[in-house]
Length: 247
Length: 281
Image (cartoon, rainbow over all chains, first blue to last red; front, side, top):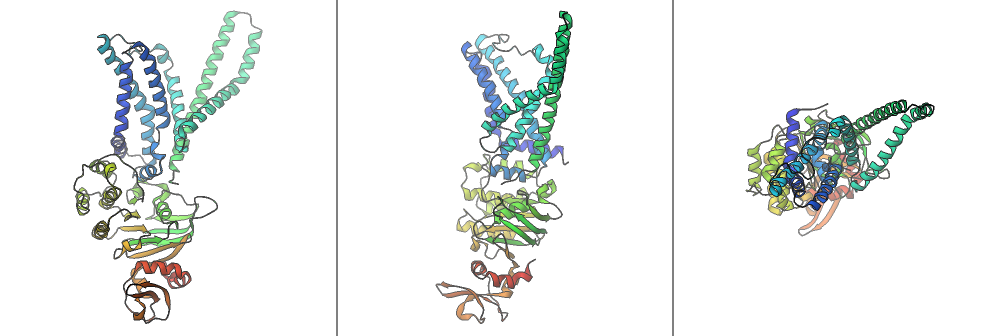
């Protein structure tokens, strides 16, 4: 494994300068969408929809974009940096930097918007900047699911050079179906077992306990499934990048 | 040293672009990689650079296996493809972000090469430049990396006549003793007085791999009426008379004409194999 921190920063710096215009566009768009949510009430929903869809399309389409075009692929593959460094940059960009930066800018846009339109920073139409309790409680789950999604997208972006968005959507549908079926299959035996136990139970507290235990178990199994899938696709995307050619 | 052993590669299962090829490319020389369109020149350069993976056979570049794309290997090669990436940044920004990856990169040399190509403004956007000017910038960058192996695919395509002359001058000036340059082209005249060794590709393999000295030792180039040899391999009508390539049976001196050699090689394949088989390096 070849990983050099200085070289990694050089790869990141190169990426930042070459894609400068795209990144500026993303920053401006995120801020502007946040800003206009405060302008007119009916715009809030539209802006939020555009933000969510735009964000998802961007995250789905952009990883490894330099490998989709033959000429860019040639330049990127020949860049004297290791596969690990090139792969890690994409991972950090799309799993950490962009989600944080884009969300922060959207929030900042709403903050400035509320100052401009309502002269009151506390008047947020959509979000007051606080972290919802549900998010805090499920942070691990959200990160696992997010990571899993990114891992699948990573691999798809390397695999599909043409019509990648359509293919990625198709893969996501198939993937979600399979993972749901897998979860059901994994916990299926316990469902039958629990259901048969519950049938003979009349005490509502005991039924609740069963349901709670069942819920916890299902949740745990889902997490395992997502972690295994995420690791699998992460490793697969790395191997795919190693085998990338300019065919 | 680049060693290629029993290399086979094809873009599909039905047709191999390179088949069972064995070739040694000595370091410290300018090699001309010649061949008709579609004979696999670009493919061979891509295989040597690690951009394509062979189905069978081995490639060894200074004990590196190209397909592993190790950093030390990549920093010692510079490959300029015929069609390159459309980068929307300024020349100076391009140099700034890419030079860091090449340990021996020289800004002074880069500027000097640009000046010789008559490009004075480094603040121009690469995307705004013409194809030829862009190519000059990349050639200058490639030479300034001082990488050990420089691969140019059709470098003179899109260059005007003065720039082609300039290209030859710059290559000869920039070339260091330990450097190896491979220039792939079908515009054989552009390599006049530039190359030390000629590799001709044909039918998924190497038809000839010989140094200029070896070629002129074995072959004679010139006007038919001045030829003393009986074994004429190729002839063509010219303004001054019939130009021929003949077997050099009398050890006469002549100047290599790459275009004549190229045509002769395809017309007299068997004779070339017979003459140059023992010269394969």
